[in-house]
Amino acid sequence: MLKRILKEKSCLIVIDEVRKHNDFDKLQILLQCTGVRTRVIITTRDKDVAIVASGKSIPLQLRSLTEKESWKLFFNKALIPEDSLNDSVLISLKKKILRKCDGSPQAIIELAGLLSTRNLTEWSNVIEHAFLEENILASSYEDLPPQTKPCFLYLGLFPGAFQIPVRRLPHLWLAEGLLTPLPEQNMASEDPAEKYFKEIINRGLIEVARLRSDGSPETCHLPGILWDFFPKAVGSRLFHAHNTTDYTSAEPPKFNIRRLAEYVGIKSYPSFDPYIQYLRCYISFNTRKRDLPAQEIGTFLNTIVIKRGFGLLRVLDLEDVYKPMLPGILRKFLYLKYLGLRWTFL
Image (cartoon, rainbow, N blue to C red; front, side, top):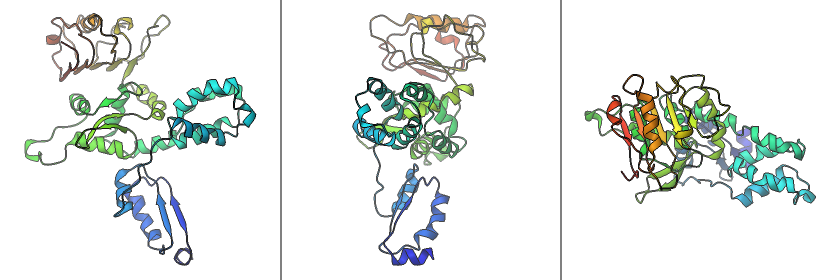
């Protein structure tokens, strides 16, 4: 009956969130039933599925909504009365809502639906604790091959909205043992790091921010909506982010820290011994004003090695940190695989 209807009538079929090749193969039965007057729109986060589905056509890459478009969609979906448009509370929440949704129509619709049932006075608390697109993100993540998942989670070390140089990722992944280099006899095969990176991009889990002249990705970043997803990585003890200078009421970590990302000065970081004695990776993003050399980094690294006389660091990445002071400390890290000193002016 469906075949007869599709052959005889003008139909528009929209199939949302096709995630795998297998799913698209199943749809072939439906697509073969369509007549010349039927049009089919398929949405997917997987670039390979989009290419196969488009045939000879070029897939349409959707952009994020602008702030103006985002606010208009939110305003309509949240069923806000027009006389509330100039409400001071709503105006104060506007920036937080736009930042939370980051131009994603799905996120805007979900948050608007969530807030439409609440009083305006409750909105701030709801926005703070809303986990938007969690099911979609969880599905995209679970769909990744097992060997690619830790490479994706590793991106959580980078600060939100940080433009991640793509060139850094293979070195970090390799030093951490997250991928295996190709044997010399297989050098013609696809590089594992490039393969993993493509798999993550194709599922919409990261976005390319800037391209090189040859069209390859130069920098990438995590969509803002993903930052509700990464507390799970912290919870799984993958890494610890140092992002506060107020540790007066801080409790010691509940586990030995393996990877530490520094967002603010490491001088304020409490050296809870023995929690940092097993540190394997230290990456600093403290690109402060270039005035004085970063002496506190040497002090912190000394703290790591002082007890046993050597450190277990495999990764020390200080890219863009102004003149980190490392007096004679590097030779004490016997297992060091990756040392990043680009743009340190050393």
